[in-house]
Image 1: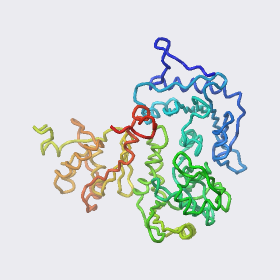
Image 2: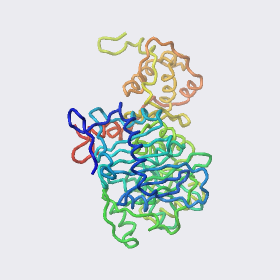
Image 3: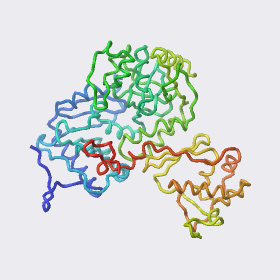
Image 4: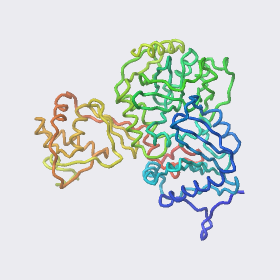
Length: 359
Length: 149
């Protein structure tokens, strides 16, 4: 059984605050080394990262195995090691996670406070879940109250916070966007939920285009702006699922925490997920047109479409993210993608755009 | 000088020196289109072309009077725009600091802008940015359902 730490005088659970979070993070990492040693590492080669996950069997372990897309490239050189240990109270005497105390919890401030120490930490209150990472050690730990005590979105993009921290340190970024490609080139689809992003990705896949992901993809804004896969998850609300006739293809699925059907790229794509696509443009989808067309958008509009959700959904300091997305918006042309009602027509229009590189 | 209403009189307003309000306020320019974001609140601000040129100079410590003189325009609208930025907590007053000289390129951009200095605010995510995800959460829905006061 896990032992819950309690304050000696009040008997209440010990809490963590801004003054003690660094010490607590270091203690969690130390505990993870001891307790995690009993768990066999599960290795996943990723772009630039050699991910090793130690996790007890269960739904989260299955989600990691099924959702994260391993990089097929044979070249292992230059990958930075990242060891992630997932623990829960009671596992080999692991102590229960300590809650945050009474002072305001400000993720942005926490990120700035810990960065000079080579640490990052995030606390998810609803499940009393800690995620901590040491950049110097290339090690991270997720401590949960119990084996299933994690937020409902975790199985769709597991380890997302650790990957965000690790890639941000490498100058790359997890971007909340969809992708479509053809012949090694492609586009990023950015915008708020409900704008038609995911429906466009599925429409393209059904018509023979490829994708390196929807929801979260890894973007490199180096010499060639490119996107690489991390997660193979796709989601559709029931209306989109029906419109794209997905039940005929992959059957019925239970709805996830958002009330959406969740499935994998491989279930609808006609070609394997490519290791990367070189990005030609950033598209901002908008529904409601009678025919699909592209209209130039300013870099400012692209940034406004791309950055807010990406910045808000990830913990830690936000400025480097804002700078990254600004660079991205400045380097690639942007277009508003006015979406017609027919999935096949949308896919054909996008294929032409990707091939030609212009509207 | 503060007038009875708590504001600045005209002369003081045009000679004010400003600075960027905090290190959470960051901006990017895309060929003269300026986006400013307050990382602490999640509010994004899109500035018109002339507003962007004024932002560059005001945030660099150039007074509205100096901008008006260099650009050959009245300083009062510049001061009014500075106070709008102050109201959004993008700028803060910086009394007692010597004024900087206007940048010739920014003055040229201001002259070429041909629009009115304006700020458009995007605050769709501000509730989520400013909420404390532990203490401001609607129970038992949990994060990200923010408590409505």
